[in-house]
Amino acid sequence: MKYNRLGTSELEVSEVSFGCMSLGTNHSQNERLLRSAVDSGINFFDTADLYDKGWNEESVGKALKPVRDQVVIATKVGNQWRADGSGWDWNPTTAYIQKAVEESLRRLQTDRIDLYQLHGGTIEDPIDESIEAFELLKEQGKIREYGISSIRPNVIREWIQGSNIVSVMMQYSLLDRRPEELCLNLLHENNISVITRGSLAKGLLIDKPPTAYQGYSAQEVKQLQRAIQETDNPVSAALQFVTKHPAVASAVVGIRIEEQLQSVLSSLDVILSNKELAELASVLEPTVYEVHR
Image (cartoon, one colour):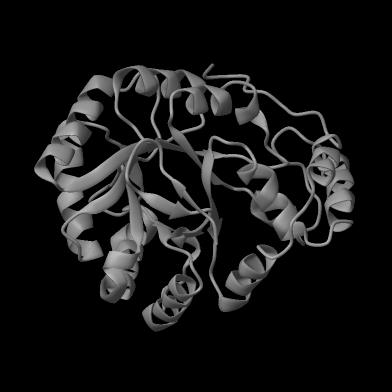
């Protein structure tokens, strides 16, 4: 397993990381799966207070507590569940962030969150206020570093200019290359790491039937599927395509069962050449962000 530094921080994260959102609701199964990932070299685990109304954090925290000093735990904040449980509202205020971090710390059974991320955001947010909240949490020792989860170039630029973020989580794959136009190089130039999500494009790059996706028609998706199936390992091809960019520190993969974990781990043994990756990239023209620029 390769490990990369997250931005300018001291955090070293596995190049492939564990997306906990896909976990089920059986804690014993989750524990076995998460500990198997740790034993296999994965040290970076991403969750959020939104997932399963906090239960996901509880399960992750309980499972990883015995190996807490071996792992980097990331969680997210900003989506506040309504009291009646009917949905959630966006709340990036200082007061809410300070309240929510206490609940995440409790659920994760830890005294410090390694990477605390704002779970979204718009240009209309009180960005300075949110930054102030994260900086205060760092001073208090409740978090080690902070970042954002956003695909919006205008939001990302504001956080680059006004904060000390070490990472941005964003969707990036062979079927969603929008970050290439503006974000990847900008973040790399500012020593801010990218954490990718959706790098398997909801399974479309692996084994799902073709369907329209992110501006591509079903026929175009099928065209790329044929190309990636011709490689030695489609999972490896999909992950290596995103991690080859120097801005990318880790690719988060949603894992629910042991077979998926083993599929990801076995893909690490297959190395594609730059020529093969370039050929995959040439199959479809990359799309660009049409809004939030």
